[in-house]
Image (cartoon, rainbow, N blue to C red; front, side):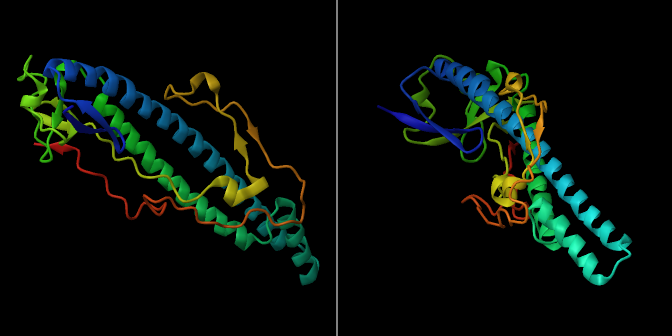
Length: 261
């Protein structure tokens, strides 16, 4: 059987049959990949990112407030130096961290995570714009140079094998205003920071709204703050869980070019 590879969405690829009419192939691609899989990916990922941003901001603000409270206590204390040190130590232990310096290190990591999440959110907005309002006649495939092949408007009922090469690789695209917009989304990889690993029992959790799951909407229903159990113990140290696609920072990220003339 003759087949080819079609790239789409966020680093996804699908093997499709060449032994069909071009019109049938484009119709399938439009309905299954554009209307279903691409749309589902954007909606689900957007909801997940929105929830992660809310949780990260909540935990970030919580840690910053603790650091501020400890600093204020130290500055306003009127007892000797030993008493000030003891007061700061008690405040640190009550939050599950040893020192304000350690908490500040975690604040820095949370700020980096928030930047990554915001980059992802922006990339998903751009991805949504690429598919919003798409119609069958606009859907096509591009070769390695970004040139649309005319499967939807020029090929008609001819065989897809007359236009596409067997075992070739193509990219899903949308023709708009004389341009080919690649329906391949350059969403930055997830960050290297995991809230459970970083904060342990000190993490504040925000529950997801089940009714909005997968619909691109997000609503905070409730949050759960850490209990006082384990007072005086150090929870969850720093750990790098960088994924294979990136270091978790955005300095090295570059979005792929998605528009071909």
